[in-house]
Length: 409
Image (cartoon, rainbow, N blue to C red; front, top):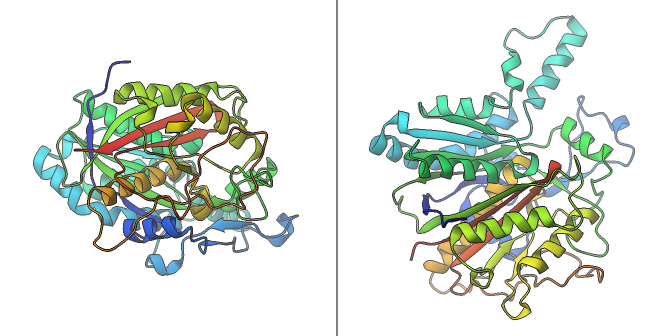
C-alpha cells in the first residue's frame, strides 16, 4: 500500500461519561476515574421484569453535562459535542464553501429512543404521534441532521459498521479529502445506551454485571456507554498539531458477532494502517486497544498485538479506556481517537508543572496467562515525548479498523 497523504485534524469535540470536553476527559483517563459507570436507570420502556440479572452498569452521561432541552437524548448528546466544534466548521465553510465540506457520521442506534416512544403510543392509541417520521429510524438520519445543522451541502455519508463505525467515518472522511471530493469533512460518531441495545447485548450474554475488566483472567464481558466525538478533517492545518497519518480496514466476516480467533483480520487492519502511514511498528508510542473485556475479543486482540508488535523491547504501552467510558459503540472509534489526539497535543505542549501520564488501563491486574503479554499503561507510565498513536476498533461482523495519528512536527 502506498503511503497516504496526511490529513489535518481539528481539536476534538466530545462528550462521554468521563468528561464533557477534551480537558476533563483526558484528566479522567489519566486518573482512571470510573465514576461515570453507574446502574442503567429503569423506566417504563425498560421494566425491571426484563432484567433477569438486575440492573447493569453503563457509562451514562450525567445530565449536568448538557442542558436537558427538548428532543431525544441522542441528539442532545450529539449537539453538546458539535457545539464545541462550531468555530472550526465555520472556518472550513469560509475557506472552502459549504459544498466542499462533507459529513461522515458513524452510529449504531438508528433511532431506537424515538422509535420505542412512538411505538408505545401506537400500541396504546392505535396512532403514531404526529411528530413521528419513519426517517428518524434511518441509519443516515444523524448525518443528515448534522449537515442541516451547519448548512453543509457536500457529500453526506452514514457509516454503520457496528463498533467500528466512528473510526470508519473518520477514515471515509479522510478518503473524501485525499480523493479531491471535499476540502474538509466533519467526521465522528455518536451513540446512546437504549433499552433495545442493552437487552440485545444481554441476549448475546456479553454484558457484565460488573464494570468491564479488559484482559483480566476474571473478565466477564462489556460495559456499554454513550457518547459522541467529532473532528473537522481538512487538507490544510486547523490550528491543532495533529494529523491522520494512515488508516487500515479489513472485513474478515468470520462470524456475525464473534471475532476471528486467530486475529488475522485485526492484524491486517493494523499492518495496512502502518503501511499507509509509512512507518514501522517500533515508531508507535501508544496503542488504544479495542479492549471490550469479553473473553473472545481480548484473546483475539492480544494475539493480534503480539503478531504486529513482536519485538518486546519496543512494544508500546497500551490501554483500553472502555473501563472508564464504557463501550460507546458507534462513537467508540472516534472517542478513543480523540483521546489519542489529546495525548499527542499535551505531549507537544505540556502544561507547566504537570506530570502527565498516558491513559491508564483500569483492571484488577489479574492477567490471563493464556494471553500474550501486553505492556499496560499505568499511573507511572509518562506521556513523555509521545509522537505517534494507534487506535483500534474491532467490531461485529469482522469489521476491523486501525487509525494512526501523529504530531505534525
